[in-house]
Image 1: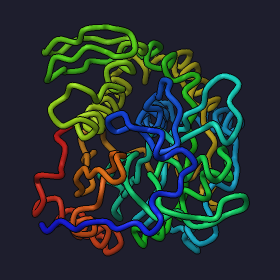
Image 2: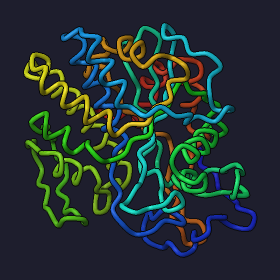
Image 3: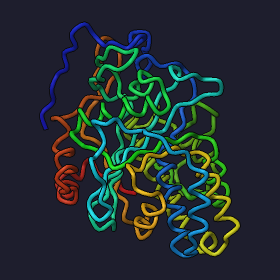
Image 4: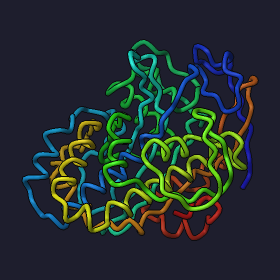
Length: 358
């Protein structure tokens, strides 16, 4: 794959892009913890589905539906005109970088995931978008547009629903993909959900010490509670492939959550299932593009945990004006064309380098 050089007229336009010199630091960002809520969000949505497939009670679906906030998260130019549940589906999942007392402009999207579900709904591709990916962010109210890291689009849009809309149209302009729905996930409740599931089993491949808690994670498979699992998948420094390893670990955590949710104890314990549903619902804001949430959940209920494929966008790191970015390699190596043309199985076979083993 050929690499290309990025030339920025006038430099990066983020208010504090030049102020961030740390390795991989987000342009315009503030120091502080960032939690990978996004992958948990999709994982816990399927936790719900796994339980409903056995319990089969619409009452639980209605109860869950009432706890979920519904907003317009997709920009009109990023929204598919009509969603057909029998065809291929594309969803945008956004994990907000929300801190206590933070206002909209103080928030960033820490994790961004494109979920591609081919027709038939028997598998799904989880496409992790590097948070430092250099993109052109279109203008919006209060922001004149410019080149910046993609996770800054949420901030420039004001955070919340308006931030998600600016992020969605930024991605559509980059990829040509229009979305069938979106979800905005807040960290509150997700650590509790993992604990309600009795923890998850994670396999550490490289020794790493947490820069947040000083916890040393040693190689080997081990049981982790919510706090420990989240701490582990936050790490990117001192790993062989930096943020690419972080993305892969997040995808592995999703797979672990799905596997744990599919075990019999949750499926046969309506009390625990209800607790999980309520914890998940209280942390989600969704846009289903007019499709009833109940219909979407039941349509996806047959999606097995072992049919998830982790995908990393073909890209490479580059330093511009002393700021570290991720830049698309050869325009994404045909990945976005494959998603739009529903040819992901062929693309994954031809590009094993960018496929993460879950």
